[in-house]
Image (cartoon, rainbow, N blue to C red; front, side):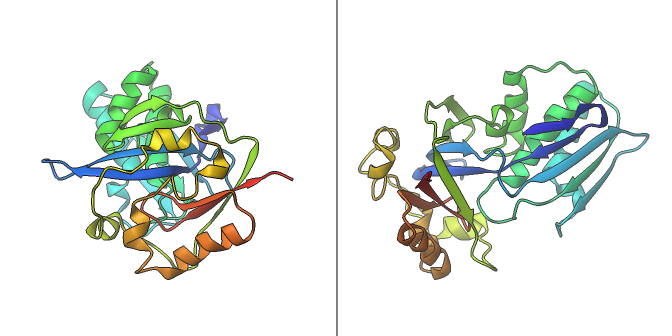
Length: 261
């Protein structure tokens, strides 16, 4: 996330990818325990733009989305801060550029950015740990976007630990099969929780050239049979010379990691 013009409270939210995503077990609360590496794509071709300002009454406008704006995570972020800190209303404008239902965390990125912007707007002086705690209440991977650095995600994805993985020497290509949208509920319906043969952190300690077949996104097993176009895109990346390729999150976006020329 990068603030463009602080004085106008306009900022850009970028997506993430999951490098490996293991669904370990189903919990008594209905959620699943996960193990994944969240990796930020700052500077990605897809981004959302947020504008937030103080106002006399709360309002929200979202361009490029078809859901009730009052249910958007940015609106929930403001309500959470209002209830905790008694802040006044804001006006929120969101221009969606990150594709929805693609496993890129666009809504979560917007949520984290809104928390940071509103905190700054009302001079709440919230530290990073507090912002992460608040973000974690709004969505499983919202907290990741507060720091927006490579981090291991466990629990529901809200338990975060900084990771030393750096892919800046590689090119990451990101694409979405035209017309493919995967809901999280659809992806989970076919999932079979299990412990991986190679623990994710052990697999990611290997060179990128050894990740194929070891760094696994468990959702591919349930999503690919119903959406062969996503599997085909992954194979296309390998055909084009990717060192590693995978679907991110619960789909439908696919990325390939390539050597830079």
